[in-house]
Image 1 (spheres, rainbow, N blue to C red):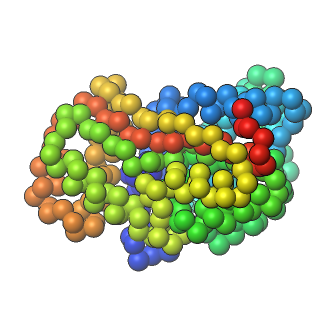
Image 2 (image 1 turned 30 degrees about the vertical axis):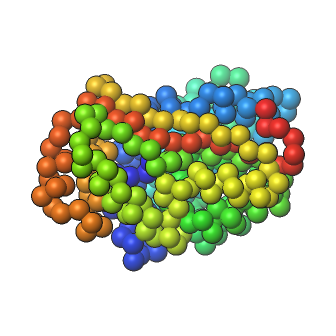
Length: 297
Ligand SMILES: C[S@@+](CC[C@H](N)C(=O)[O-])C[C@H]1O[C@@H](n2cnc3c(N)ncnc32)[C@H](O)[C@@H]1O
């Protein structure tokens, strides 16, 4: 789920949605715990016999997807990290340098080592809504994205699936919000807030009307239509007492989004936000798709 942006784009604007480094850092641990193990294994198996792989990460934020995915891939990797937010690309450079065992500046980015793996990283400040082709021009073997697709339109997903097919690339999308949310303790107003939140999600986040909670379904449909074998698995956040800050931030983001739709009155939102939550489940889907009829496993 991609809420709690610092200045999420109102429905009328076409500027890319904006996310703070702090929010992305706050969610990274929960994201890592949520990733679907079977899907990750399928990715690992697919590349197990290769010496190297080139990867493009769409909407990379602070580089969390590279940090989580690199261990699944061959020991020589080239990554292009793409984002429309230059400050997040700077944060990615900084955080990846600190995550790696060693980090050296290269002509175009960084050379990292982590264990036995060498990772060349380049950074590209690209608005994917208008320039997807530029992001994929290097014809990567793997296209990946984490926590991105609820922001994009169904049209963008269609275009992306066609583009992956055209270059015969595998595709790994993790942590796509799928519309499931359960708050603990439950309150009757949860359903009304969820409906308003989903309405807000389907506003324009820079790509046209956003797929919101339908993104995972659209991804699977479009990749299958383009001849990919698709494997999907759940990757929910299961948050408890140790995730107090993340839960509070989620509640705040939901309340703000629901309020912006005008579908829930201010008093109801105020009451809802005051409920002490000790848990939440937020549904996500991970997906791995490989071109052609071969099984991704
Ligand atoms: C929810 S964040 C996920 C970041 C990262 N993948 C992660 O898992 O932590 C969505 C990311 O998509 C980027 N983004 C949003 N709209 C974009 C666009 N039109 N072009 C490129 N990046 C975009 C944001 O700047 C942000 O970094």
